[in-house]
Length: 412
Ligand SMILES: Cc1ncc(COP(=O)(O)O)c(C=O)c1O
Image (tube, rainbow, N blue to C red; front, top):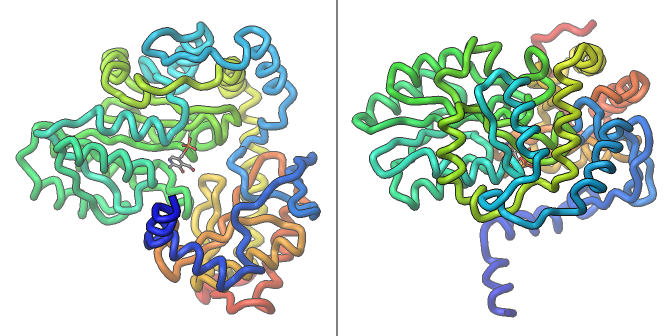
């Protein structure tokens, strides 16, 4: 065992993390323990109350009494877990949730997986075989990259293309031909930058080269597009050439993931996704909560929640523009403020924490080297005062670190 631990410690990623933790022991706000969750997105960490700007619970539904009650009733109905793969049986709520998701999304069917990671690890290798081609955006989420590794190990040719670049995709597909069928896997919202890809152009290129788009829309589910259906339908007008993957834990504040697809694709994925066949399902009580959230998204209430989220997002964006900071995102509720240097990014996060605001400092390997960002996640139940307070604290950063500014952006 000692030898195993020693050899694990030699891996480059562990050496990198340990090096950072040693270099910046006071600034390295990772692996935190949350002691308590308070109202208005506050939480207690290491005895300090901070406002949490690091949660994907974009609509604030994690604190909604109706969601909590649905989980409570689900526990009474199904117990803590049904303890079987869905290949053998599913609780009724699983089927109802899949119907409700498909109805909300506008697809013929949907299939629920326990997480987006498990959806990508199960579905991507299930879609392609030896004669096929899998092409992934070079900055696609880690779970897409891991799914691609399994596909490659199974004999599928796997290539990548430059981030969000339809011309690069076209070149890759043209040069790779011939292949039986192509799958192009991308994120609908890039989770570290908040960037949204040019879906219409990418789809046009994919269609012209006998390929479908596989879009991991995890960060858009429930929060971007009409009724929160995500990026795809509004951009493309139909799901004809796409598979859309969504999250049930982020905007939904429940648990799990879905793939929106045809009935036939669902039938095939059930037989060919190893994570579906050989793993357990979403905890049944959460399926009842997913049904409830679908009803909320399909009702007029969604507009109210979305308006609150958009107002908060605008408030932050305006503040960042006044500061002339360089930032990306702002269509989805993820806003990445560029810092650059790794140490400066960590020190900025520590400073904000001490001022009472928790924001994730994101550095390599989650973003390219020397492209560190402060990743701010806006939620519908952040108060205006907390957003103003965060902007005020961000405004003090130039006294703490060398903060890059956008010279082209005029103040005011
Ligand atoms: C694009 C994308 N895909 C997948 C995931 C992982 O989702 P899950 O936690 O459901 O596995 C994330 C997590 O943030 C993500 O941003």
